[in-house]
Structure formats: C-alpha cells, structure tokens
Length: 264
Image (tube, rainbow, N blue to C red; front, side, top):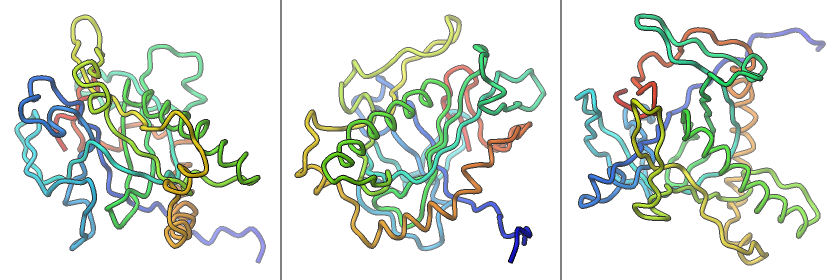
C-alpha cells in the first residue's frame, strides 16, 4: 500500500495521575496527605470504571487553591511500564505561558527543569494511566525506572535467555516517606522557597531470583493487552520529540519552584 499517510496517527487521551508531595504536618492523619503519593482525578476516568487494589476513594481532595475535586489516592501502587516521554521548561515570566523544550534543545542548559510522564498499566485501574511529575520528582521517577530495568529486567534476561519488555513485570512504586518515615522527606526548591517533599521510589528486594520474578510477573492476558496499549501509545510517546512550545497543560496549577500541585 506504499507509504501514504492515512491520518490515523491520532493522539489518544489517558487519565493523568499527579504526584502529591505529602507533609510531615499531616503525620497524625496518615495516608497520602502525610506520605505523599499519587492522585488520580475521578472525572478523568471512564464512566462507571471500578478502581480497586491499593487506591482509596473517591475522596474529596482540597488543593491549595481551595478547589475541591474527587480523586483516587494511593501511596503504593503496582505498575507495568508501557511508554515514557520527557520535556524541559523554565519558570515563566508573569502573565506569559510556560515554554517547553525537547531533550535536544535542553542539552547543556542548567536553567531548565524536567517534566517526565510515564504511561503504565496500574493494578486496580482498567485503563492505562499517565504518571506525570516535574522537577525533583521527575529525576526520582527516572531513577526508579533505571533501577527497575537494571535490577529486574536485565536479571530476567540472564535467567531466561530472552529480552522481556518492561511491562512483563510489576514495579512496586511508593513514596520515600512510606519507606523511610520522616527521614524520607527531601528538601527541594531555592533558598527563598524551600519545602520538604516525598519522592517516588521503587520497592525491590536485595536479591532478584526466579521466585521473585514469578511473583512479579504480569499475567499473560494482561501482557497481551499491555502490548496493544504500548503500540497504540507510540504517537503519544513521540509527541514531545518536537518543540511543543506553550504549555499544553494550562489547566493544571503547579508551584513553579517545588512542583507541588496546587489545583487541577
């Protein structure tokens, strides 16, 4: 049929889970308000979707802007990684939109912050979701994915003499505060605007063996579904390979220094 472009390479939309930084002041209350974790807006999910597993909700969550929204919250989730994309940005001048840059455009610049989005199948959610993080959380999630690849996927390669995709195994994702308690809060921001936040971390045993891989294996029917989701998301993964220019997420209010979500 040749190389004719039939125009079916359209952008799919996925529910986006944002990272909440947590706060030591909420220790008595516990849960995501204290430990940090992921917030998944209920309104972005398919109508009638049943959310199970480690997700709590729907909960009425009030952001710092005063806006209240129904969300599902979790400080520990299991995900099968499908696709990723990254872009870079700088603090916008007052009254002007944020401008984003590609990896190539950001090369060598130290004045830019990163935004990372990871598309994944999440246990307890019937559709793929995006985990979207900025700044220090972006670097932390990058480290999580690298650790998972080095310590699980490469080990699986050696044990099974194959090359399994990332989505063949569950990654347990949690917050640094769940793992380390109050010591898990990390200071971020500049001297004039600093705060302590929880960061996403991977939970992995010291030894990855056949027994662990069997427990962590994504069931075969879901693997096939993940393969299809990954293929469909290829245009999504490449969307930031060109300069996206002005902020496409203008409905999301984020603290420019710390990346804290202030409102949806």
